[in-house]
Amino acid sequence: MVQLKIGDKAPDFKGKNQNGKDISLKDYKGRNLILYFYPKDSTPGCTAEACDLRDNYHMWINKGYDILGISPDNEKSHQNFIDKNNLPFDLISDPEKIIIKTYGAWGEKKMYGKTYEGVLRKTFVINKNGIVENIFEKVKTKEHTKQILNGLDTES
Figure 1 (cartoon, rainbow, N blue to C red):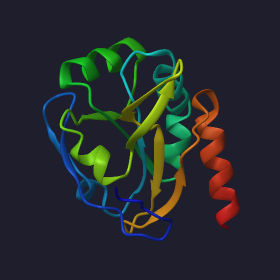
Figure 2: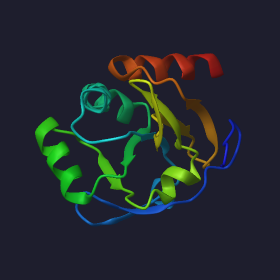
Figure 3: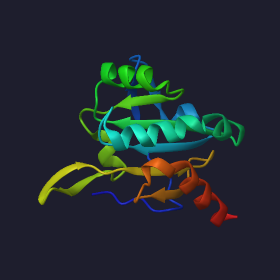
């Protein structure tokens, strides 16, 4: 499995957003990007994470960051999730888990004593030159914006 590190060039990707429109990393050239991977639309943790990013969306835009979420859910599920939570950013559908695996956001998980393979909640901060600036592997869903901001503060 791929293990991206800070300083690596972010792998290019292409996927369909909630409207069936192709979105790729190239679309964000010249912009900083918060690329976050999450397991499933409309689940408590994923909703908390998306809403925390939504609530701080204008601050991120003012700081020069775009936000993009990726999960295996289909486009219709993404559109429902966006509508239900007023999300102002795109969500990419990755049912084949190609982007998810490329970014190392797939692996072993444990729940209720069972081990299984699934989407790992991970966030990558990619700078406007396409370089991975930070990686969050232990995402605090309700405080993710604060967590990312603290990570940005340590870089300067």
